[in-house]
Image 1 (cartoon, one colour):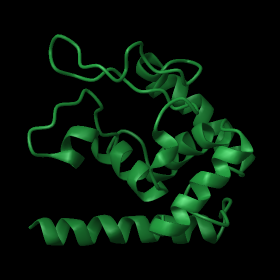
Image 2 (tube, rainbow, N blue to C red; image 1 turned 90 degrees about the horizontal axis):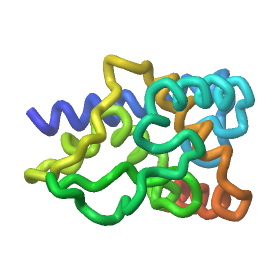
Image 3 (tube, rainbow, N blue to C red; image 1 turned 135 degrees about the vertical axis):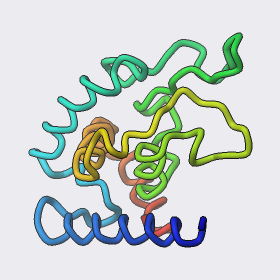
Image 4 (cartoon, rainbow, N blue to C red; image 1 turned 120 degrees about the horizontal axis):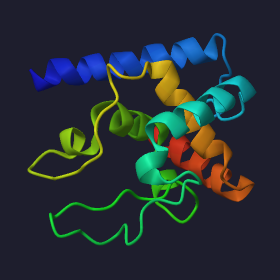
Length: 153
């Protein structure tokens, strides 16, 4: 069953990449349309509606985000350059946002990061990620693009 689901997830990523490459802002490297002004604007709106309450209105994350709280959960990390978001390739960021951290990591890992599949469309998830990536300085974007080139997404 996991093999079939994995194939479906890979297929969904491939279809999403194809859709972006045929229209709304294909990137030189990766899936995230961070150079597409319309996607970034839409992503900023969606980020405020769905993400800012945990990850901060300025992408700053929650205090002490590297330390588990009394219930064993890590606070929401920042999505600015002080966090680790840019250390992950586009496909992994898409999967985390789609499925939620707990479901993706498995093995009893606990996270409050819910999955947004069924809440946001793939295009909207990519727009949120575009907003986040567009906020990074050029050198971090370049490093993230290099990560994408190495992992192919």
